Image (cartoon, rainbow, N blue to C red):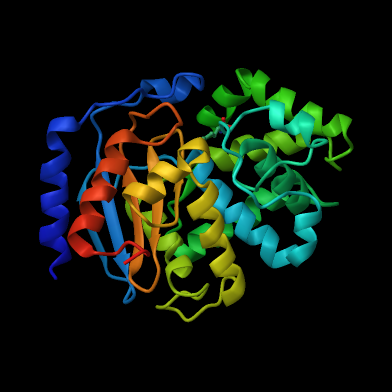
Length: 307
Ligand code: DON
């Protein structure tokens, strides 16, 4: 199977759909992005990267960052993390508040906004938010083998200035005693990790360990324990697209994580890591053309974990 040909076919198949969906506008800086952008990259077990379209252009990874923060927290804290956050799909939007009230401020899973805030609070611990952000950036740069990865502070500021909804979620959890650090400390770090700017190539490379049992297959470095890697992938499959996770599993059949910047990270265990980017979103905040591209890719490669 020739991946380059498959990628060219996928790019051709989505071409008539480019620009479909709605670019996120609740974070004003994201609304400025050209909706016709499309990029895709696949990194295989040898570390070889295959790309098409705008695969070298950095975009805002937004909620895809939650996969890395969750992985980092699970590795650092172990099962104690589950005392603070659940591991069930929410069936609700990423910024829903109703479930939080019913469940005493304990978020359903680490991939919805309040769950990711609890994870961020855990990772800050007794230290400084800046130190956690430095650690995260170092991890991503090392895994992607690329020091060009950065945090777009303009996007972080833009989200903070309009972040009433996330502030509500954080204060709500604070009222239930679920956050140890100050709300603004947690949010400052949360907005920054969401504002990570990465290209499809960088993102696919940084997440390669998730396709190979938690170990980077090229450098041999173990990033997370094998059993934790399985759990991260399970969480992505069941919760990675919020109330659209069933649809994503049905159509694509790979652990995946969306971001409102229009990126999707998908993991094909034992095969490789895939990142796709196209800014127009469906109503659950998943890239519309990105999901279509992944559907076409899986049809051609047979990489669905369901056979
Ligand atoms: O907190 C937010 O609303 C954004 N920083 C991230 C949301 C997001 O990416 C949802 N995923 N599709």
